[in-house]
Image (tube, rainbow, N blue to C red):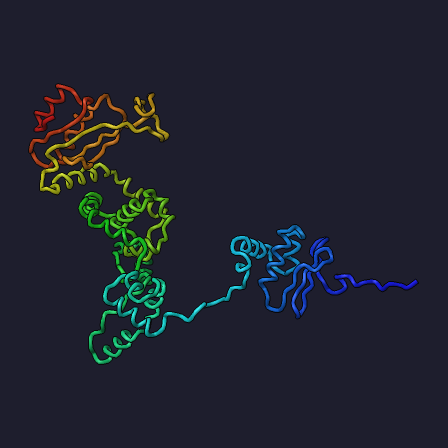
Length: 422
């Protein structure tokens, strides 16, 4: 009987087994995938798209597991997952290798960069410059950033050599903060004085929109009244005005609490304050504690109220001609034992404080007083009348408006004797 020669098996030929059913055979001529001994996929040298197709469909058809295919093809499971996803959404074209690097010649030639700089120098915005030159806004930024040593800078150097005044150069996008190490060392040594704001020119600064609040801040008189009330903080790097401006700007940015300082980059916020960096949480708390220990919060509120009422409204009307007084109940969440008062919101008595709000003719706030619950709004009005008179600042009669909680003939007589009308 004739003896039949045994056929060679795939492992003997150098194939990599992919589980129990599939095998991968790759060499210099390309690659082949066998399923149950039958040839299923073939690709030649450089045909990476077909190779990725074979790996993806081995998993999709259940011929092999993800880990087995990834190990056999020498890739990570994440890469294999991306191949399968690209095949699902874009077909075979999604598996084609993508050329790395620029897909076309760069648009930012020397001539194009000069055109961009010329349009930008005319005062056009980034978007307008991009539309005028036919490029993207990112290309405009790269063109402007590549002007560190522009012909203008060279001409400035030549002009300086000739003794002529240089032309105005473009400010840096993000300048290095002005060094304040000497002032900080002096503050640590206990020398008197606080750091004054110093602003460096910049083409772009984060939180720069907060500068728009400075005119309104000046109108409120906060800095002037605080300086007249407290004088100054103990000697240190951060002064009274810096701490107050920092608190106002953080409140406008949505972080009124001291802990909110951790949500800002101290260098970025420091650019708005004119310092190398903004104060930290522990510094803010220490400075606020020093202000609280002075016990002059009431004087500051009175000074702000007087500053507000001595000015005039948009139509030059007297803001103190009519004052509205109202009481509000605020639930108390602290640890002290205080009296209870009925809360209309909660529908039962709770420990609370009573706030007395005073507003001007337009309803804008003048001041607010927080105290434990009083017998009525009428008694609170009697106690606050001297403060109102001090805030008005002269002997003119003022019309005071309030709701039924202030109804009291004795209060009316008391107010009439002191130059107020209810």
